[in-house]
Image (cartoon, rainbow, N blue to C red):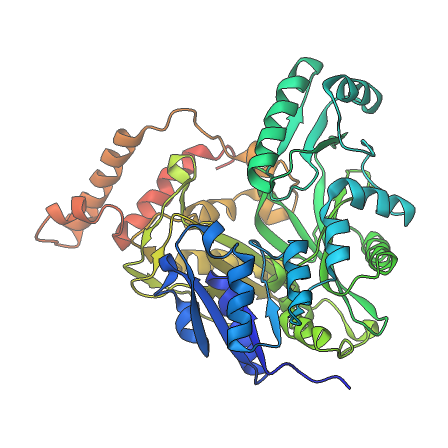
Length: 507
């Protein structure tokens, strides 16, 4: 007989660790946190019921240390481990280690994870399940001559991709034959560095596609449901920046077809727990399987806001042996939702990471606003990890209201102490094509001009001049405060935002 877990270890950090801890505590389960030396004062540590030190700041000795995590899990006597996203969330060796230790891994079986985590093998599996895939190689590339022959058959432009990849790493667009060899070598090196696997494959590069993903849930009782789609086409360097649901591009008929195929694909691999099927959709509404993410997605809140389904709680119920708590006909999309990923990066300086300490912040409030973040006064944003600080989500009765609400809350959201991508998002929501929902995966490349050489000092001088005038108007006594507060002053936020405007083509 199924029984809910008593205690669960969260093998992650930051906002996703907090998100999972909150779900556990609402379900009356004890939450166990783990942390590195860089995260001693992080919010997820204090929010958990128990917390254990993993090791040094470097991820390989802490959040990627399978042996240490299992050791702590045994010591804390947990029933299960939730991996969140990133780190070990799609590592089949970690899933195997949990199984061998008698601890439930909250996710799919290790075999399924291994199968769908390998991009070449997952393509083969989807072809067998009669799921459309992007034309490309059926096996990893074995030599340059092999790649050259395949490229001629597939046709240019094409994509060189890491077999074990994800998040845009180990990926290169190849426009002409003379770029092929260099791209293969670069992608292979990057893939080996990022994933420890240098295998690559080739597929056709689709012009101006939409990136649409379907969220599914599957339990051990044979039930599979979908939670509709997310539009994830606003990307920078193949990494998602803003997501929304429903998609403003696809039709109701296409939505229904894609959701049905995603459920069929999940059944074909006997999938268990939460997962996401990612597709590329061309301008003629043809869609192709891209990959499957065998974990909780960063952008899952968008789906939660339009369906009312708590995906993390469903994960916990499914892993405990319970069936999904609702039927497919009970799920609908209500209204419209957006998510903005807020990074500790400087849009005015090539989006370079900006680790540091949060001096103060103001979180936007109002109806239908959600913040998933680990922000707190004095919080340290470490340089060792992904610079994602959190996610800003809004819901509206329709897309127009959701855009208006997103525009308002972005103005209201302020973070002092570090540079963030908030100013970038404030400009994106002003672009006509975004407002109208007429964009594709090349939206940022088309709308944003990334300067080759950043005019650091002139820009700083200009901003300081704007700030000085503002200070004079506000009767500030010490203008020297302007220089000291250059990185953190709240009245410089708008100046910096306006400074970004020239880089946008349509503003």
